[in-house]
Length: 304
Image 1 (cartoon, rainbow, N blue to C red):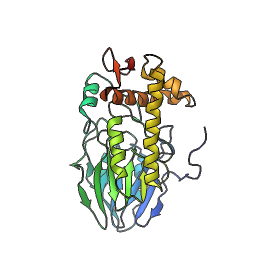
Image 2: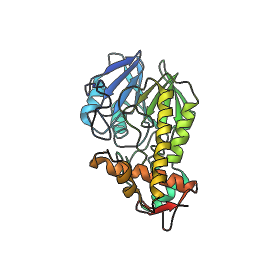
Image 3: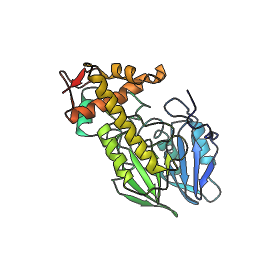
Image 4: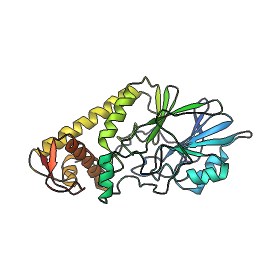
């Protein structure tokens, strides 16, 4: 499989200054789902904000603390969402620094009624893994602004990849978590992922003139408007493929994924099936597909 960002090869644990007052430290957790690893960001010059502390890895905790220069301290810890590659280190980092953890809510916060109903049927799993124990010290509502030492962040509730997903606007730059990435499209895995919400979040971000996105994984997105449009078209294309496949007869998400994602490595097909399921649930909400049984990951869908 071709490397989507061959020039993006930061060293894990090594702070890289990517803008005045902004450093990125890569966590040592590469995988097919996390690419090179999780990007943790340090914002500020004296009182620092950490955005996405990352996985529960003592080496990464040491790297974040070692990045502090004399006179610097961590005053805020922001978490975009409660996946295990983004949030678990928040509590150890808070205990080491005294800084509060700020997020939209716990791992179940922000789910739509439809996804909550699916979760209550027992549907779970898929994706990077949920940090079920995550609990912030301070809840950030959509639109909340937090001011620190020379920086201000605006919280934007951007569900879709995950119900409690926040993006953080820093002027015309956005720390966009896993909603938008340049190296791959985001996984939308029900019930934590919701394609209806995902498309709404893309549309919301498209309404503002961003200069750059700093994602949870991979290189900065230097043309945000174009990337948002590309991701929207990609989802529309995937929906058309699913509807075309269903025209041949009823199928479940796994069967459709195998027929549609023909160039995807076998190890990633379960994630692809989750993406297809997200589309099917969105289409079911719109009344364009139906199922004779309960809405589950193994349900057979057909055209209405």
